[in-house]
Amino acid sequence: MANEVKTIGVLTSGGDAPGMNAAIRAVVRAGIHKGMRVMGIRRGYNGLINGDMVEMGLRDVSDIIQRGGTMLYTARCKKFREEAGVQKAVDVCKEYGIDGIVVIGGDGSFRGARDLSLKGIPCVGIPGTIDTDIACSEYTVGYDTAMNTAMYMVDKIRDTSQSHDRCSVVEVMGRHAGHIALNTGIACGASAVLVPEIPYDLENELIPKIDQTRKMGKQHFIIVMAEGVSFAARDAGIVEKPEDYSKYVAETIEKATGIESRATVLGHVQRGGSPTVRDRVVASQMGYEAVQLLSKGIGNRVVAMQQSEIVNFDIYEALAMKKTIDEKLYEIAGTISI
Ligand code: F6P
Image: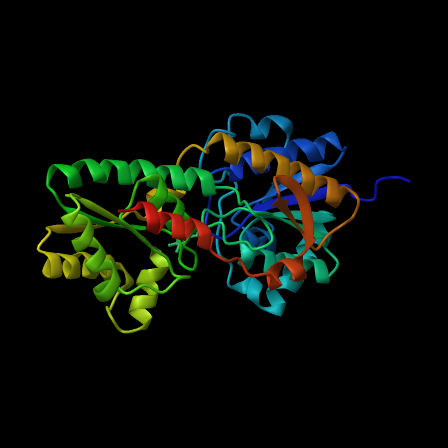
């Protein structure tokens, strides 16, 4: 039977993540290997609505595997949340002869992929987000690089924290998820890790713990906190702006313990940089797999990793799953941070 799928598109959507370029490269090359045309769609779903796309050849994806960011640019597209936007994208796909699309991004991007699949344009998602908050996959492209960046930054903060006998409160990314915070916290020997998934008590738990470990000889302290904790504090009316919360925690610790404290928000530095081996390899595996599915006309799927194997899930099923924090790891972090 002749291959019905002649042209596929690839786009990156939502927050960028290191390794997205490696995924684009894999999609383009695996697609061409299958005898398909591959269109690079710019700025996520916006490019699909506006017809902002270009055919990509083998050499168009040379020298990008080692680069952070995304050569196709990315965006969050409001129009695509409306029926009219999705319909416009379908019309553009028909105009350009696009038979399927690989969407590299997070949950929000997969909702768009589901809507397009429903309208007859098969889409396959690749989890690309530093937060690793995609429940169906134990890994997402960008996570390892982001954690390593955060670890290097916290190591640097530790040097100055140690020199001054200070307490450093470091906020890492993760609006709804504490995976970066938990792993970075363990890797950096943090005295405490604060994550949005697990409640903590600043006055009655964290501060007494700092006092207690100080009595046991600890002289400087690192607290790693997920961004989501800041948002929760704003929503609970504790601070006005989310960026004030790490400062509030540092000031509260200083007031209660007398230990000079400082707050640092790492921010977008965590989203950039050259991807690690893991991110380049997983991105290549997932890009290849997405093309195999689309080449058979299979859409409405998310490529995922389970027990280190590449698998795929129905998008509805994938979006209904909930990722939990590793409570055992959280317990380990708490136990050995004394
Ligand atoms: O990519 C996910 C994420 O990094 C979150 O952890 C963070 O809250 C958000 O993106 C920041 O997004 P923006 O770049 O739009 O500020």
